[in-house]
Amino acid sequence: MLTRIDHVGIACADLAASIEFYRRTYGFEVAHEEVNEEQGVREAMLRVNGTDDGGATYLQLLEPTRDDSPVAKFLARHGEGVHHIAFGTADVAGAAAGIGGAGVRVLDSAPRRGSMDSRIVFLHPKDCGGVLTELVQAADQGRHHGEG
Ligand code: MC0
Image (cartoon, rainbow, N blue to C red; front, top):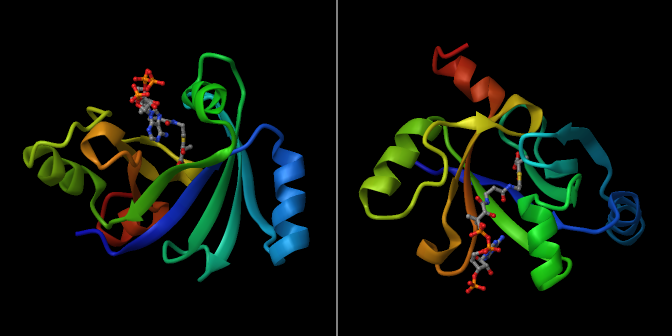
């Protein structure tokens, strides 16, 4: 059902400075940048392996765009660091239904738009051993499964 690690989300206070750290220190380059107003983040996806066709693994650097956003709250409470882990699936709604049926709180009643037009659902960290967990269906995985 969950077939790979799609990305690790990392909360940062200054996106440009974090991008520069990952470039200078590890040689990772930005594959994609966008603002997601619904989630309150400005984000950069740094590809670690694979290609941008639904099979890659990324580091996702997240800077809050507003003070009441989840990432702003996380930074205020914990400081910079790992914010969530995201598992890739070909069927995010089905995976969420299965996991929710096992008693884990699913935070989104329907998939929302994530990075690069993916479809995403979050699971409550308190039901996942303290790890905010995201399920991701990449845009082209939907097409493979006839969902446009
Ligand atoms: C909060 N908690 C976390 C956490 N955020 N624990 C681990 N990892 C995190 N990231 C813990 C707090 O420490 C606290 O525990 C408890 O959860 C309640 O936290 P809170 O600060 O009072 O905040 P709530 O309850 O209002 O909201 C927490 C919740 C929320 C996880 C439900 O942040 C949420 O719905 N997150 C999902 C959306 C999201 O994070 N979006 C940003 C990334 P204690 O023990 O101290 O009480 S968007 C994204 O990543 C997209 C664009 C993408 O991937 O494509």
